[in-house]
Image (cartoon, rainbow, N blue to C red; front, side, top):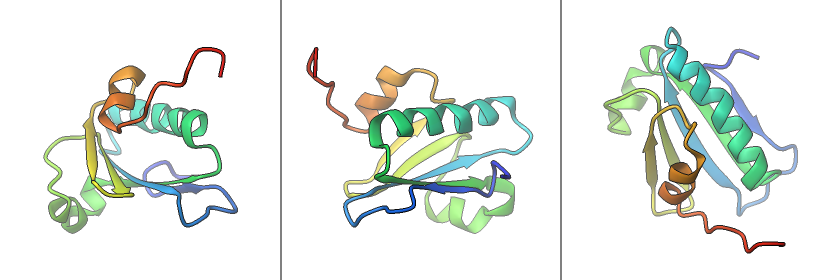
Length: 109
């Protein structure tokens, strides 16, 4: 699967699915790390209930402009609202969790 035009989703994603758009630069190692880290993060936190759309900024200039993307990689939570953003390679999962408004699970849960 080409990582810069991929859409990852579970086969049975329901109406309450989290939808994300990740803008990357195909030639950037940081963007490659962001794709891997984002996929891992979403499988851990939203297994079976998320859609991740990965877009190369160079191939999707109009979409990036419409989403007001000014840096790469940029992750946008499209749904549910409110929209949230995270810029970086997604390696700091605690910051990513906080940026997306994901509550920490209780110990032992």
